[in-house]
Image 1 (cartoon, rainbow, N blue to C red):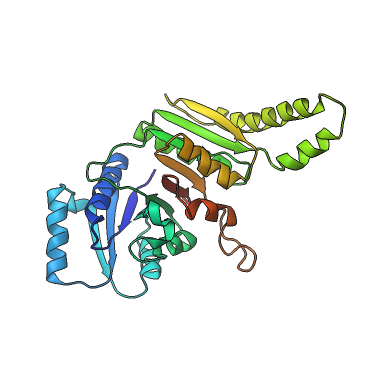
Image 2 (image 1 turned 30 degrees about the vertical axis):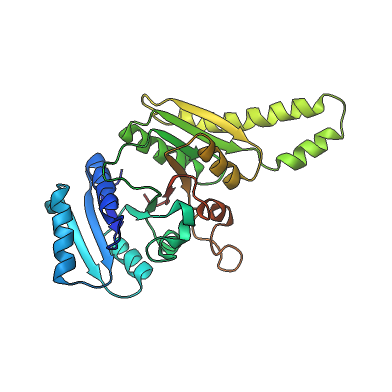
Length: 278
């Protein structure tokens, strides 16, 4: 699924936990690991990194360490592309939003420009565990079948215990307002129909996929999809939220996916953004 995983590192207090998380994923997916540091390189930092990798038994034969100088986000994205990385792991501070982790808005820029999938960890652990409770975005978009497929593949490998696919009723308010102008009882009938249509959409996708032993539940919401998705993930205390990135958008009107901005500005949990190329 992910043959090469990268971790953007800074010599911060949470670097050790992020390395442990990256090692877990490396072992889980039997991947190669790429560690990328943009900034100063000196013997003390090299020794510190080597000692940390040895402490956590990171297989150096399957690990590449890249030291770069320059614009952090640009160098990280360029390195991932050059080395054909499938997944890049970054960190974020939940209490300060997504944008203030170790190098300011670096993680945000990585999500914008990266051609590979991005996993953002809110609370990395030195003794990491699997993501037991996972929420996948099932809102009707072009890339949704791919996102669901990749999400289920991740959950099968990571042995998730609960998987929720959350779908939104598009233009719910408008449709219900129109129904309210009709005969008595029409509102309930329209609501049931709308919910049934969205459930059927997800079920059609699931019929084409191998769910393995996963327990998959479908949930339907009726608000702005990103806000409702984040709220649901927070309410159930999800370990991981999986969404798509909407591809390359127009510079003027969609420099960055506005809906995703709602999630990124206040992360409810760990976030995996699936890029289409994987």
